[in-house]
Image (tube, rainbow, N blue to C red):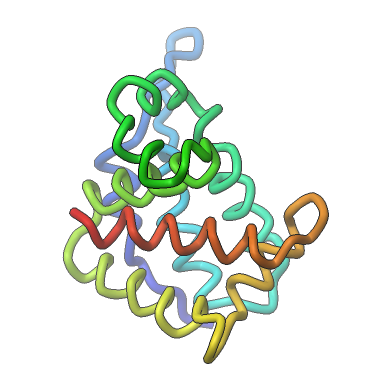
Length: 155
């Protein structure tokens, strides 16, 4: 199996350094990890782990150190989503992803969303996300993906 390396450079360049004892350890930021998980899902759509990991990042982005940002810098996002914090956080994640993506990575992510997150053509990614959500709500999954897509496309 051949794997793509798209997103790896971005994840490394924008990693978070954690100091553990005398070691500095680089971890992918949540936006970097979301990029990597989407690309991995595109390559290995049959694996539940990629879907579960992506769903976790998408549904917990507000609580991943972004609460203050969302309510201070993201008032436009909250207003645009009818003050739905989950949708606003998904859109903020999209914005954060596009800020660190190289053009070829952005092209791949946008293409993946177009090919696999369209309720009228192929909703494989929406279904994968739905299956990871409490209550398995299809409309909520579609709205989260659409909000992410808007965040990516508006910058």
